[in-house]
Length: 398
Ligand code: NDP
Image (cartoon, rainbow, N blue to C red):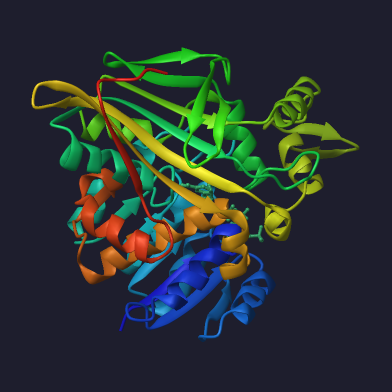
């Protein structure tokens, strides 16, 4: 009997609930809990298998503990917001339940993307014989597994990685983000950092631009360098990596809107006084922007997310590009969601399956690259996200 308790009923929570229901060989019962229970009920109504729902404030540890004691799940799958990671981990420790998430903890008042707060739980999880799996989305998540696969299957040593995330689709809106606008804009406007020769190098947000020729007819697109959390765990666990960079595509239109919003102060995350009330401008902006969940039926085109890993094989320079192509409209037909939420939710469920079945097991707090990539990639393909691989002699550069 493997019951899963999903926390968070947003875009990713919808995909996770659908996909857990599809994996009925592993999950024999599902509860979906979130701050607004009506959103859980709406998702449950889309799914043929029974999905129980509950209301919980995941900022509140006693409420979480009560819910987990009542539901008695085998695993808590956290797809609420990064602000809730630590409270949910605390509740899992108190109740003796395994934990999985898709994004590192962020304090509300500063946009910092670091694993140190969650890594600090390692000894406590280990002492209780529990497992926490961090960052089991696509990036972080599958990109970590791709890097591990490059190191094990294709190269004797990985020396450089470029993680490249393209949304080659379009939702036709003047300005909208593909996942939670607050989390997305905090990430995109943060200073860029990349890893080079054993240290982090800081540059301006989105200040470095290249053109990357994407496969499968997508063709050349502008990509911009930014910081992304998986680089921190990858350079720790794969210390042969001398250079790590993360790149994302942005349309000129997105960048134009973002620049104006920044210039007028709408992306600030500190409180300002407005008509006798304190508001956070970015949270106010989130209330005005389209709900990413509403973009599902409007979004067309594909995503292409992958890792170019460069290294050596048999003493010769070699490069491998592992990537996935995902079609927005196909995802929507399957689970009522666009590909951004789909590519996050499916790997979360695959990670959960491997934990529950014991294929990935450890005591403590882990990142994805610390486990064998093979069972993960096999199940990921079965569940809708196959991996494409291109190998080349020599190195290309970005
Ligand atoms: P949404 O904003 O669509 O959904 C978040 C959900 O969490 C909402 O249902 C929200 O409830 C709920 N929630 C927020 N605060 C609380 C709280 N205090 N207690 C209980 N529930 C709460 O976000 P997404 O679904 O787009 O993203 C979910 C997670 O996935 C985020 O952490 C995001 O960073 C991560 N992500 C990871 C990616 C990856 O590839 N690794 C890519 C994309 C996202 P309410 O509806 O009441 O606001």
